[in-house]
Amino acid sequence: MVYEGRLLPGNRLPSEESLCEELGVSRVTVREALLYLEQEGFITRRQGLGTFVHPSAFRSKGRIETETCFNQLLRRIGYSRISVEGDIWEDKAVEPWAELLQVPVGEPVLMFTRLFLADGRPVIYCKNHIPMSFLKLPISDLDANYQGNLFRLLWIWCGQEITHRTAWFKARAVTEEISEKMGMPIGTPIFSWDEVQCNIEDKVVCLSENYFDTVAVPLCSMRRTWRWGDAEDQDAEENGR
Image (cartoon, rainbow, N blue to C red; front, side):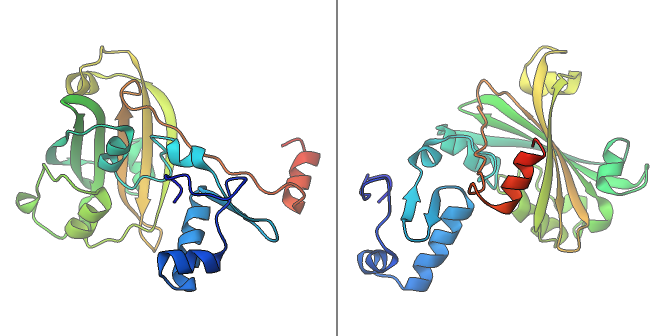
């Protein structure tokens, strides 16, 4: 409906009742779908005015907050041939990663690297640190070239469900290791995305260092704003935020 441009004036969706009739589903299903779309920033609902669609959000490629895996991210950007090359070994936790992993320096960790190639070009390099205490399988049984979702992998390998993540973004200089993987000159600035994946008990199951060729993989984020007039917004304005 959105992609076909079948919207009411003002980029509005039909009423819930009309959507139920047109799609042949229950009102509960429609409401769950609308809630998801609202949470992802694709629509805004206003009581008495209707549900407004934001086509620009659908057109934005490389949205980091909506993707659950880099394969999906690359497909949405437009790449058709995606492959992953991996490697696995056991190591010891070192700073600054040990602190983020919430383990002592020297704690055994599983290192699992993944190099994503898009149409034959290396575009994303991921270096994952997993405390060995979470591992449920012998290293010999692990598939270094696993092509799927990291969260699925952590469930298979560690029996851990990831419920939330925290990410930090910064620029770093290309190291010898990254240069060998991605073919970029040593010392070149590169966009990095460090992320901890936590289970329901808030324990860090995995720490990921992710490095991007942002020429090949442009990234963006859609930031929602609160409705003007809310007490929090007024307080923020008064305090200069």
